[in-house]
View 1 (cartoon, rainbow, N blue to C red):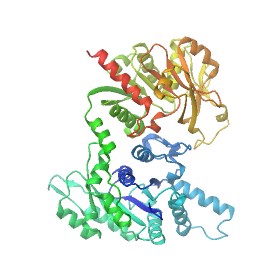
View 2 (view 1 turned 90 degrees about the vertical axis):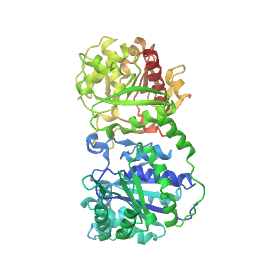
View 3 (view 1 turned 180 degrees about the vertical axis):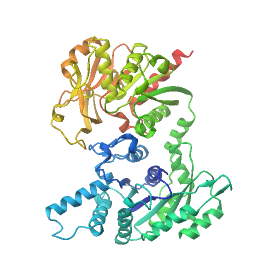
View 4 (view 1 turned 60 degrees about the horizontal axis):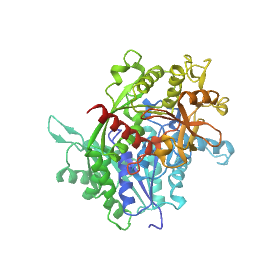
Length: 541
């Protein structure tokens, strides 16, 4: 629609965790509904090259793209809202910027000049700003800048935006500043001063925001909007209310009501063609908020204190719940505190159990005891990555009788390594970006539950792991009833196991949660919630 790619930058002020990712995804959803080709990219100020080596408590889950990039969890929001695939190019960190610049310096690309933040770092940032726009695939590129304006680590990005806005043209580039309007209970009033100071900080760096999006617990009156417009140098219709929503999926409708998309298109001098009715989105929300049944599902993992550690899983369960018109009540349970003595009391009231992915020894025995309990009591079970590996360990121990069966990740000297390190991983010393990452094909066994769920013979799913099912035990495990029904056709690796004579007992080596979106929920999650619903109905007559 647009001859020249337009660029929108989203910055944050006053405090972190205001929801820049959700705002960016919501705006992109509205622009997409108007017929524009839109993508979103995230620039993170931390020095890690990517979040792949981070503990989930640091930054939430690590999201994985088809091309094997380990990225910020906001890319999951982008994909879930827009139904598009992101890539390595959609997430850039300070670590990656500096790594590239230092590599250029070592090669002599700067011809002996002193390498500095300005212009070399900022030039590299600007080049990354443009990469997706230069493909010709997009009319609009939205760039979310991580962190908060005023942070030392964010300064090079703000400076790069200042330069980029003038290089690229003021009608082709704009800045949206997401900020907080706190409410003081004692005086019962909303306060604009923090936002004024945040905008002042941006102005000191030479960047004037074009739109203010204001997070608030209470509606912004006309006087508040006029005050913000006056002191922050924006038009009053560019002061957008972002009132707290009951669901992240409400935000596109709130932004539509506030005319954010119209304000943006006017600033970028783009036509306001097509009416963004969002009928499918509204239908999804209707099903999400008005279920005709309810189930309780336990998510058993080791990072349960931080919900963002399993963000894609919890959102996938919500998508699947909406598809089934079934409310999904999710309870996070730490596997570290589960054992043979208390597992019955902790798990007995749930309609299904999902054992989550993770790394390391902590909480492993709790996961194994949980899987034993749901296997023996015919409770629907879904194991993802390490959850699938724990299912194999549990089955081998308690059905095949190999009591010391384990993964070499947790017990390197086990005599029965039913899960072992991949051959190509044995010489790897660097941890970052070296796992089996990205999309790989999987062939499904005819007549299997997995084949029925997917409705096709060959699938492609995203991976993030180092350890695999040990094929030396495959025949014995299969004869005992745990069936390897999904196999990678290139290297014969087991990707899916399912248990015979169980209502729903499936483990996947891959991460199906990375492929679920609001309007296209993942079939594995859809059928898992179906199984939970059936279990609930049968056991609660």
